[in-house]
Length: 105
Image (cartoon, rainbow, N blue to C red; front, side, top):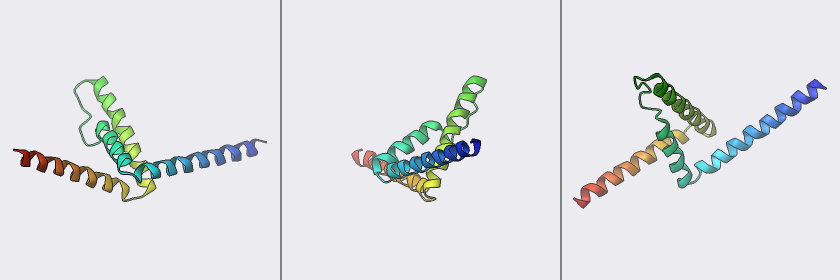
């Protein structure tokens, strides 16, 4: 009985994992989805220092970074080139905006 329950839970967990992977794959397949993901990652502050000088604020930032690192891991599990693609697309957008501002001056 317990073995059957364990197998059922394992199968349900496997299906849930597969569904989450397919969902993330779908989000990554469209530019809007990639822009949302990179915005979330930027908000998580993965590349900024978490230290603020105040324990509560530092711990909060560490929590944000943990979520960001988890999301990067999920993105890379869908495909190893997905995260670098996000970074390159963001860099290109930033450069295009910079050029547009310079052109306006």
